[in-house]
Amino acid sequence: MQERLPAAETWRALYGYFRPHRAVVALGALCTLIGAATGLAQPLAAKALVDRLGSDDSITGIIILLTALVVLGTAIESVGAYILERTAESVVLAARRTLIGRLLRLRLPEVERTQPGDLMSRITSDTTLLRAVTTQSVVSTVAGGLTFIATIVMMGLMDVVLLGVTLGVIVLIGGAMALVMPKIAQSTERAQEAVGTISTALERAFGAFRTLKASGAEERETAAVQAAAQEAWRHGVRSAKWQAVAWSSVGFAVQVSFLAVLGIGGARVASGAISVSTLVAFLLFLFYLIDPVSRLVEGVTQYQVGSAAIARIVRAERLETEDVTEPAGKTGKASKADEPGRHGPAAVAFEDVTFRYREGLPYVHHGVSFDIPGPGMTAFVGPSGAGKTTVFGLIERFYDATGGRVLVDGRDVHEWPLAELRSVIGYVEQDAPVLAGTLRENLLFGAPGATGDEIQDVLVRARLATLVERLPDGLETLVGHRGSQLSGGERQRVAIARALLRKPRLLLLDEATSQLDAVNELALRDVVAEVSREVTVLVVAHRLSTVTLADRIVVMDAGRVRASGTHEELVAADPLYGELAATQFLATTA
Image (cartoon, rainbow, N blue to C red; front, side):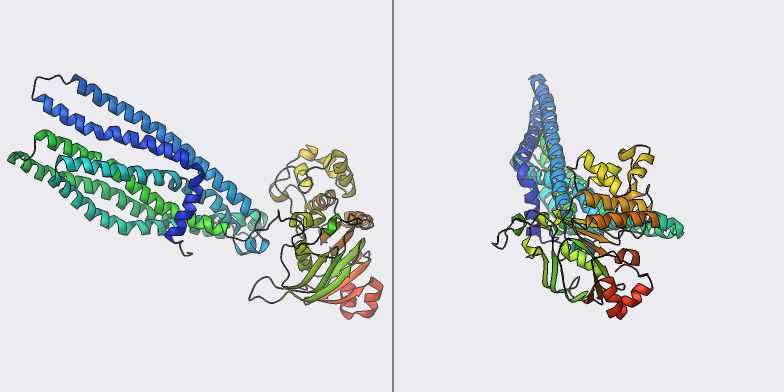
């Protein structure tokens, strides 16, 4: 379990969620206090009623007053409760919007270090716990505290001796409760972490569902998820146990106080120190004390539960994000992207680039340098682990180079506004992901403003027109979770079409034809060759048929550029390339 946030930091975070709604929460709190005030008047009315029972005075007015107080107090408190519940939902909505906005802008290394299921649980279950602490906890604590003080004052005016007996019992049991509260927070945070583990395990299982079934791993994965569920249950039960102790302590304190006040108060009535009506009113105040004490316990308990959620949410908010709104000219230089001639194919260069994924890990790139003018197709080849795919990650700024410079159009990628940089790039990943939704939504994912004619054109170019005609609902056909209703080759063609629809100046293809049959591969190679006449195309390839079409080839090995040139030049000059060519580049993707 990660270290808990300091109390001051938790309160600052809590106030940050609470602050936009403070006026509405104050209104809800006012309604709660008015309802409590009507309750405080009831024991006094009851005392007057008891006093009149011994005389000939009418009690009708007092009964009407008591009834009115009960109805009025209930109505006002109901309004206050609705206001607070509505505000609580608004707090959760705001927190979820903020978290979603941040988590979808996380830097790739942060996502790779954090389990996706755990991140999802921050948005779902943790924000649900947040709803109570930001409204009910605050209002319960404030309203309960003020009502408690008012009740104690009224009890003191009745009889100081009986008040001392009551407070003695409450303080004794309250001290014991103070020891319980941190255990509630600790158990709750561990339970929430276990819930995150459940989400992670399920996300892993559903993300490779066919592999899970083909491997006969249902029982093992079920056991793993159930173990996480058992862990969440164990900590949830522990939290419930301590909450039960806290709540039962309230009833126990009141009952002990009642017995003590009844005994001592009866003796004081017998001695004539107080009247029977005073004892009755004091006992009513004592029972009425249950409500403010319960509110205080509820507020503190919810704070302990909510503070665990706040800690997890704050840690998620501290994860490093990308600044997609970064202004142009960050370094004071004019934007070269806006200069004449900068709307054609992009040029790419690496200058002595070194890179490792994080401190303590070995370097992936050791002084990589190359210069690729546009247009044309450049193929990156080499054995597994050579660092080819990492080249694309550095161009897209998924990662930042540890040393050296990555240039696009002669401009360091760090000088580009991130959104502008990526807007000129089309990128097809190794596994060509397709998102749940319709085929049209997938095609428009990177170019939401594309026209119908542009979609039809790219369908023809990516050899998808026949597929669309065959689908029951055409472009509106649902493709399933991660494109499960499509074949591997169809998913690759969808990914290529999606990239082409962006009309990029730089197209990155990471083994984009690996799952295509010979006919479709040949057709798409022709498409890529056609595109490369107007666009700079970089390809990570392991098929000789793709590499021989390249205008230039960069051979990488062990994180370095070993050689570059045409296919004929490299076959004659570089032994590694010659060996790869002889084996048809049958290597796995790096």
